[in-house]
Length: 112
Image (tube, rainbow, N blue to C red; front, side, top):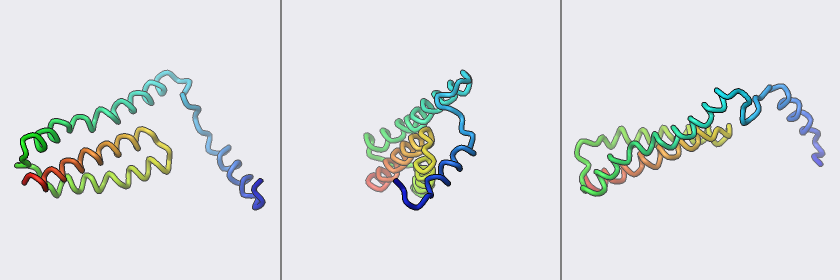
């Protein structure tokens, strides 16, 4: 039992948020929730040809290390946001984008 009494405040805050149930009863919103999980995985997979080109051909000609480094850095706040707000699609998408961008940056440094 929490002796500080703060658990009542948190319960009251949660009741006032009016959160929608998950999975949502609306078929359109339920479909959108599932679609976003697919997009969260499919999007970063689209960078696989670029990663394979760098790592298999051992060349990174035409790759902007600065751009992909910044993409990786800008993924970090989104990963934190997704974790804090428990937003699975955001967390999955930006974690996978971070890995993809990092692989491109590392390959660009190894194979200039």
